[in-house]
Image (tube, helix red, strand yellow):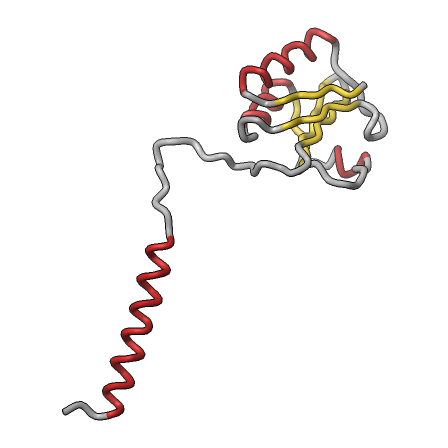
Length: 136
């Protein structure tokens, strides 16, 4: 015959085991062969900014919000990339079907590159399944 103390221990262990099993069963095994989407689909899309500084073009790709970004927020070192290849890499991180709004008027001192570069970025977005809208 088991003592009440042992019965409590068995119940506690069974409860812990049941909790552990339900927690582990809820986990998903991730396929390590396929790429992950590091950036989440945004409810308000993403905002793309571009500007020239010391002869080099810089870009910032920010998640859309209800507020207007300041020049300091847009040009912060942690969000900006330099050059078209870096921008392409940043765009490649977006989920397919994402909306990107590229505007030169949303923040101070923003500008578009020449039309040839704009066409290259449009083409890259189209090939990547990204919906690019240019707001002039």
